Image 1 (tube, helix red, strand yellow):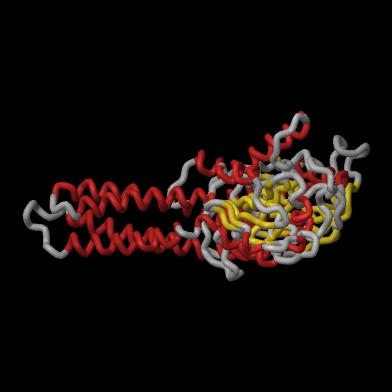
Image 2 (cartoon, rainbow, N blue to C red; image 1 turned 135 degrees about the vertical axis):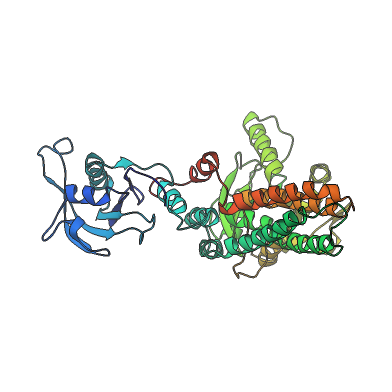
Length: 463
């Protein structure tokens, strides 16, 4: 169990107008706080059994309201006794009316009764320190809160239920067992080492490497599920960039006119494709101009292009790619750029649209919707997003770095064990210890305060 000796509290619901607000209190003094601020019929909260719901009122001290003991709000009080709670500590939740003033008054009363304001993610941090969840599951809590699609939410739930933890934990245990056997080999005198042992250990390490490589392959799609993809719509003025944005979104998000240079700044909106958030960015048309405002818009366009996961470069299907398009395409990455012919309803010879090494990959009409469904599928394909909405294991950047570290040390151990130099067995054993540290840090078998601070600082206060 964690050795926290203080009691924390925070507002767990978003501020603003709502049906209810929830103030959570956790720690050894949670029931003392409840006794101090809650007024209801029957025994005090501290004398009640776990799982009890009580109806009553929260009353405050004279520093909160004009009169000491005045009721602040009508509430439902929920009681959880350790270890059957989110934090595995005694926990009290006060459910009052939503709104700025009511929630703030309840929290103030709780803090005056002896609790302190919780830091970001401190409830989940205590859940980890008290052994209720591991670090991967703790991060899944934040992934679930930040999920922008059903697919992302389902993957977060899978992670919260321990699927990724189990996978990494199994790999950790396999390497731990291998490392233990290798350490035992060190007890043999020089020249007495049984011949089959080292090849068997190497094969077991190679099997663990297969597991590590398999989960490493999930990183890119996991990144897209968590962070989304930046998709920039670029091209010359009046090729239909804003019209395409509106068509993809199914709403008139961007202003559309026949006046070149209408879009002066980037316009952004999110589209969900196969569960992956795609941040669509409409940009200023790329051309030479003397207008300083338009020049600034073009500079911002170029900045967005440098950060894009995918670029949809539009050309006018009726005109075909012109010299300006060819010049702009020379600066684009072929692997992350899709050349799109728009206004195909007005063009006669679509199949003849080619320019150098670039080929028209999509032919659309933003005005009529022709080809839009195929373009959306192409966007997902180029980003490597599968159409299958099934959940799976998807690692984060932190997990990826830990796995790469473990992989590096396992590879070094395999190389040393294969050198036929028995003196390198000690070095190989050291490499495996380092590999275990990398995997252990992922799931929280090994951690320090700096790591926990880095992870939980991303959480909101109240979670």
